[in-house]
Length: 95
Image (tube, rainbow, N blue to C red; front, side, top):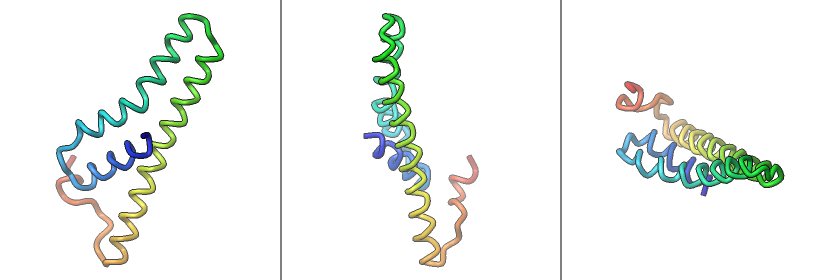
């Protein structure tokens, strides 16, 4: 799911579509449960589960970032192949 969140985020950024809510949901689904479970485990003093939840959170964040970078690299490769400029569209660059 984290990989899809990163892809959706980059595609929404590049396309400039109004799908920010969907991206937010994807990212929330991949990060909030692990962070919440880690917080509860810390409060309960269950350090092993807290550590595993934080590890899961870290894996999810890394997956989101890596998939976003892959999408950007693929878009860049396609633009170069089609001899299009590397710059973002005007509606994205103005943000």
